[in-house]
Length: 360
Image (cartoon, rainbow, N blue to C red):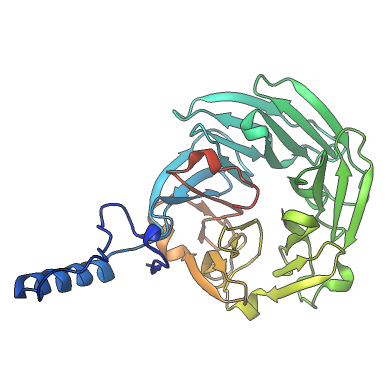
């Protein structure tokens, strides 16, 4: 378990009395000394965490799983008949929204399906693979990659806007588009072009391309080649981008320059991919590493990692922690059970009003 030593009194967990700074009138008694030592031992041996009630929601192909920092499953939603769940979000009312291959699904806190919006069939098939929660959950944007379109729907399922993206006729259904994210403060989306290794900024509605960031000149060589999967926008036009098969993370400045860049091997991660990302309040980056198409269990050991600003893994979740708690997908060729974690959404259960903040 990762321990956080409090930097100030406010960081101490509930129930721990604050030390008094007032001087006493006489020397401490033996009983007081023993009590102070016992309290210190208890404090240092307790899991003192900055986010005592933090949870992490994981999109895992055919189910959604909530875990805590110790890797214990605390909640889940499964057996909904959905596959290809690439993203899932906890909502401020306790519900869950996720994108699956067949469209968008929204559940209330009792896990009752309250909204279902279907993906549309394109010339190469049907595949939705990303969603963004807008206006605190009043609206949802669905990346419908099969038809190359972003549709915004409200809680009643009414289509609010349709944003057509460039047609990628030469690319396969699976290689067209991936992650979408709302641009902070603008009526626009960041869009990952998977096979093109590019990130686009497009205007809502008109689909006008406002900016293109081509990653090829910025990428390190990779035997598997690079495909752009995860996009996390920060303030001022800064972006985190993850290339799935290339297993590289890049932090791009407002002008597209590389501020930081690491490959999985440099981070000390044993994983098949680097997929969805999320910036935490402490400046660290959470990364999901899906263990799809394993040949050996070890190559997919790490499912989730927190990386500090210097490129050090400070916390991780492994297959061994989850494989006995959830029912994974058995890879037909190898018989290996895969967890397939593709995206992560971290939040504090005691601050549900903040779960959709873009910097969390």
